[in-house]
Image 1 (cartoon, rainbow, N blue to C red):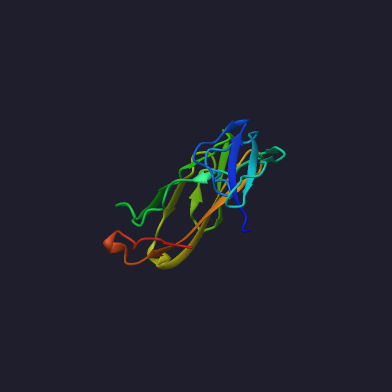
Image 2: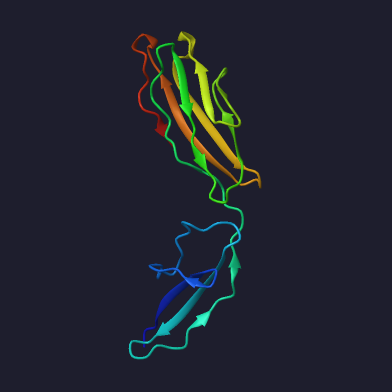
Length: 161
């Protein structure tokens, strides 16, 4: 007989409703949560005895960047991007640029990117932003920013990679 399985997930000993797949959607899990799964075999006629796994403790989760980079410059030919990130564990976060054109800066506490663009900055610029939490978990955002004619005061939409 073919055997199928049913899955019942628990967070901190309480069943997670709606989670019945063989893998758990990690949304809403934070550091310190205890996760278990009960797996029950079924042969098409009779369900077997379910087995409850050993509890696994969720470790540090990385921050999540929730903003998207803008594609335009302001009236002063300055590129501004307010990076917005959240840490579900509630850890303090810091921002840095790991790849950026000369002169581009990011405030490590607020995440505000600022770059005064000049005519010599025309072209494609790869940018990589790192957001890290106090426990060392990190997430990255990468995109390419194209600077064209500054007289138009805009750049095409960033290309995400």
